[in-house]
Amino acid sequence: MRVPTAVITAGSLIGGWQLARRTGIRPLGGVVLAAGGVLAGREWARRTSPAVTTALVTTYVGAFALSHPLARRIGAWPSVLAVSALTAAASYAAADRRR
Image (cartoon, rainbow, N blue to C red; front, side, top):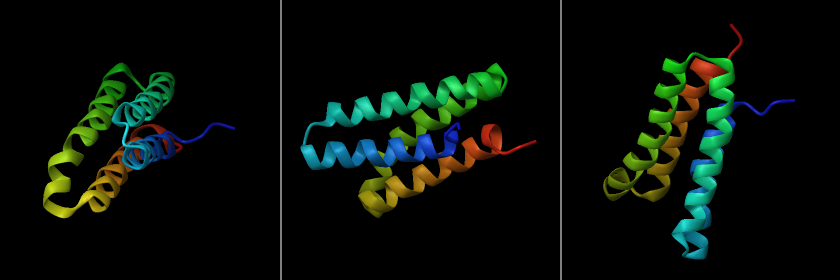
């Protein structure tokens, strides 16, 4: 059974942030983020076209980047949850739902 990429992306964004926050070691969060990106990216490449895969990778990396300035405006938890939901929705729509 394959794990939906929406779950992988949201889980790695939230999990990476929590790991970095709780340990104080930001690179550990980066490892979780990178692992999630690799797992999801492999599935996207298998299930979709190169253009869709590129768009989803850009969305995933962009969500991580956006979470930082957004956190200054709305707080860390709301920011991470918002970008995780956005990324999960994009992943579901483009790669996970059955056509």
